[in-house]
Every structure is written in structure tokens, then in C-alpha cells.
Amino acid sequence: MSIKKIKLIWDFRGPAAAKTAEHHVIHLKEFIAAEKLQLNITDVQHVNDMYSLAFLVVEESEMLKVRDALKPHRGELYNP
Image 1 (cartoon, helix red, strand yellow):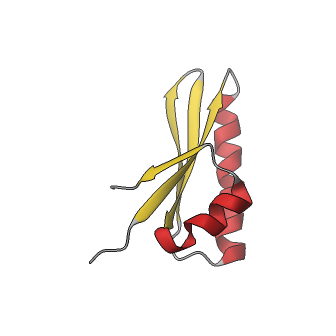
Image 2 (tube, rainbow, N blue to C red):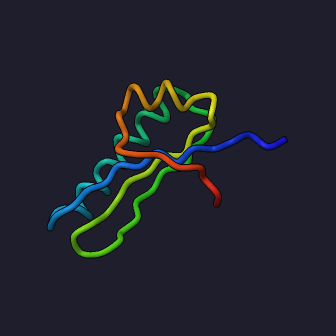
Image 3 (spheres, rainbow, N blue to C red):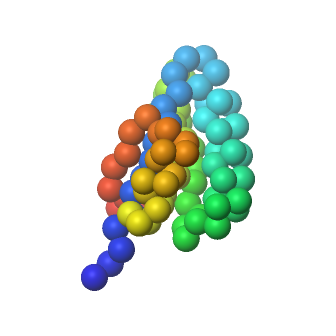
């Protein structure tokens, strides 16, 4: 049985969305290191000029701790 992975997502909109999402990933990487999370999967997706998102993938067992600490806008099952 494989471990479920959850993709936690932060949405950024507006002309500064891309830069804001990229900056947010820096903080997500710091959090991964500080909390010694099982996974080290985080990145940015640029949807268009006015919408980008940052995401962090966590194991299901860590999801509540990370969600409560970082307050993502939404989440979904992660399928690479």
C-alpha cells in the first residue's frame, strides 16, 4: 500500500503573482528543513500572467500539522 501524498497549494493573483509565488517557495523550503518533513517536493506553477501558485507536497500523516502551521488556500491528492 502506498502512502498518500497531499499537495498543499497557495494561490497568488495579480501582476506580482509570479514573483510572490517564487518567494513563497523559499519559505516553504525553509519550513521543510526546519520541520524535517519526510518529502522535499515544492515548486511554482505559472498559470498565466496574472495567476501563479506555490505548492508543497506532504505525506498524509504530516498534513494536519503543516496545514495548521502554514494555512494553505487549498489541497488535493498528489499524483506526479
